[in-house]
Amino acid sequence: MATHGSKLKTLLTTATLALAATGALTLTVTPALADTSPGTAATPVPARTQGWLKIYTGTAPTGINAVQLKVINDPKVGPRVADSGGRSLYRFDKDTANPSVSNCNGDCATTWPPLLVARGQALYLDGINPAETSFIERADGSCQITIGGRPIYYFSKDRNPGDLNGQGVGGTWFAVAPTGAKAQAA
Image (cartoon, rainbow, N blue to C red; front, side, top):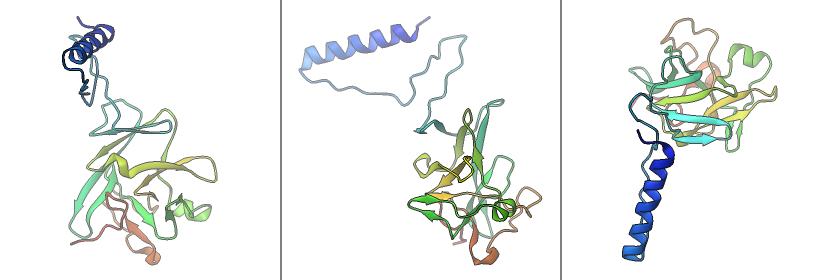
């Protein structure tokens, strides 16, 4: 059974031999260097790390403490982002993307609860580019997920998975597309 130490030693020996033979070193790195020896589970490797937040692609393994986001192809608004339970997520036009700032606090945040992530949680993305996601610290110290720099929210009047009751509210709230833009049907 190979260990990480023996895998690293083999990699370094191969690199040294390649350097000695050619005078140039080309090092190929695989996306995930995880121990997949018999009897061990592969350790997922983040696609991106933002501060303490590890961001993965795909579906979160069962039992892991994570926020899961996925893209839904909605006939009304086109591709939009939802959580693992199918609850719709929104962006607010009065927020800014660069720099990422939430302008929805107090009563606004009661009606439009922010999508939060806490230390110890991971973020899993299905159909969303990890480079588009991050988080910001809110005025109350909590951390809110952003997509395309835009802070992301739920709508308190969405009662069931797939509800899209917040679309167009006040001319400033819209379902969020996988890039952080407004979700809009083609």
